Image 1 (cartoon, one colour):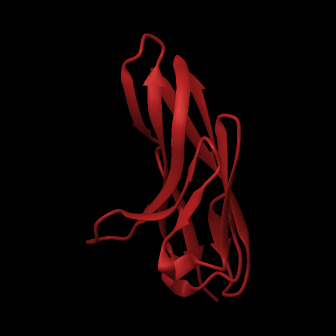
Image 2: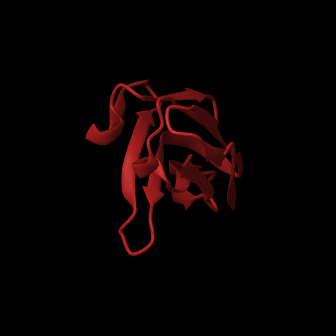
Length: 118
């Protein structure tokens, strides 16, 4: 079993910054990629940013130049700068890879609320 524990959400004014973190733990053999997704009420979950084990990153067009994803072992961070009200959402961490024993892993965190409002 794998646990993804997210932290760092909260309320911030437009133009402000937040840093989200997600730590993976459990019976993990390897993690090939980690990502942040977000979801607002009535909408589908969407990819915000992803990072592979070797380092390449990918960002949604809406956050390019403002958000930075980084990874330190089994922890992934999302630095969010110049936040806008439209960034308000529940942010979810995702990890894909393999459990010990070679079983594929695709796990989600519980979500953390980010609210951008004056």
